[in-house]
Amino acid sequence: MSKSERLVYIEVLVMDGGNERNGVARHRAEVARLRMRAEEWRQSIPFGAGRGGTDDVALAVLPANERTTAQLPSGRRSSFVRHLSQLVDEIEQEDGERRRPDRRKRARAGTEDENAMLGRACATCRGQCCLSGGEHAYLDSPDLRRFWSTRPSATGASIADAYLEALPGRSYSGSCVFHGISGCALPREMRAEICNAFLCDGAQGLRTEIQAGRTGGGFLVAAAGGELLRAVVVDAGGASRRLRKR
Ligand code: SF4
Ligand code: SF4
Image 1 (cartoon, rainbow, N blue to C red):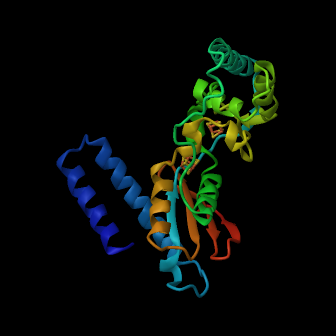
Image 2 (image 1 turned 90 degrees about the vertical axis):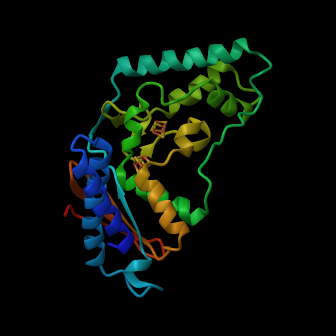
């Protein structure tokens, strides 16, 4: 744990002591505690001879999806079909508008290496932020319009079919209908803008570390219930290995 991280930890404990009901402060203290344990774990792992040794390795403490997968219940599929049909109808009624490009931010900015490490982080977490995708997958009409604009000759029915064909056979129980065992089953160009842009605090912290120069690999830890559940070690060349629960 670096000096600045230790200071944050102490500061948070002091803040929380002054207000026992301060949930935000408690959360920050918990994150700092997990990070301290993850840091100890990282220090115990040989990362090889990088520029700065272990200190050159980016550390991330991420959420952990602990659900299991199951076949998508027909009721949930029907709800998604209804949502999709509404979006298609909405766009068809705006005929002439549908090829107008969506100007919202679509993707995470960043280098290829940075995005590759973020992708590994999300794979380590297994998509905790997708749990609230439910039967809408965050898709709205501008998202659909953007995808549609890449296929100008497509009909509403064929656009809807493209989404339905992408539904995975099995998905995480109660999560987004597209949340399969290998991650999101939708190609990026079909995902909602928020799905392409969102980073949780842990992933955002990882990006900050990489941008600050920790480019000698990554130590990605998924935690839930106050415990470090699993970790992935990524070496400077991009090779990775999983570690057991600590
Ligand atoms: S952004 Fe965060 S919560 Fe979402 S999948 Fe990635 S690591 Fe998990
Ligand atoms: S569409 Fe994909 S990225 Fe978006 S919430 Fe669903 S599974 Fe997650």
